[in-house]
Amino acid sequence: MLKIIRNKLEQGCKTTAYPKEPISLYRRYRGLPVIDKNCHTDIVSRCAAICPQDCIDSADKTIDLGRCTFCGHCETAGNGGFVRFSQNFEMGAADRQDLITDGTLPILAAHAKQHFKKLFGRSLQLRQVSAAGCNSCEADTNVLNTPFFDLSRFGIDFVASPRHADGIHVTGPISRNMKQALLDTYDAVPSPKVVIASGCCSISGGPFYGSEEIVGDLSSLLPVDLYIPGCPPHPLTTLHALLSYFK
Image 1 (spheres, rainbow, N blue to C red):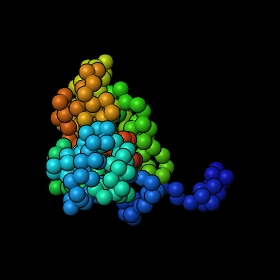
Image 2 (cartoon, rainbow, N blue to C red):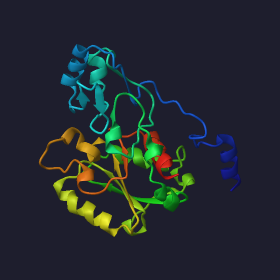
Image 3 (cartoon, helix red, strand yellow):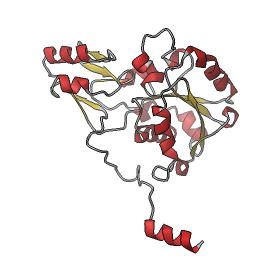
Image 4 (cartoon, rainbow, N blue to C red):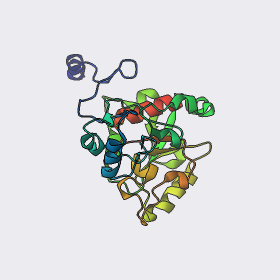
């Protein structure tokens, strides 16, 4: 016991002070895109043509974060003239349309459903469902349980059974083989319940967009309450979205 106490005193607190204090990410992190609306249309068209996800609307000069994998090809192709990626990780949205951005931040809190905050404000239990994901979203979600993020201090936990959950946190493009399992898990969660689409795969299909083997759009199966974009979403993106929406 004395050795444990000594180690604790030597190491100090390893948990981040976020959200009470701001946190900076590594310079190579690609977050919310900053878009120049005055950019020449030729540059925008070049960026749109190289985008593997078809998430750039060259006419409106917008980017669909629900499809974007943040590969950075558009920034490279246009030499940053049309878009450059900031380090802003606060990109969660309660409305799918808010993910189609012209560079402004989605207004998450304004769309938050107040009855969810009233019901789950002190405790939120989620069942993670990997619907044919590649494990990137799942891995970055698991990181939230480490001492650095310590998700439990906010009263948010991932549980083993949907019957003990307040909602489901879905990752992956939802393959045909996982569709029924996902629906069964949703039905097992007692009402009222929430549905979270995490990562571009569950939001739009991601790199598998258009495949006949996937559903690729969680909102076509279930009513989605919260969208968390990314490929995968950074743990801080998930943390910010959960705290903003439910706390």
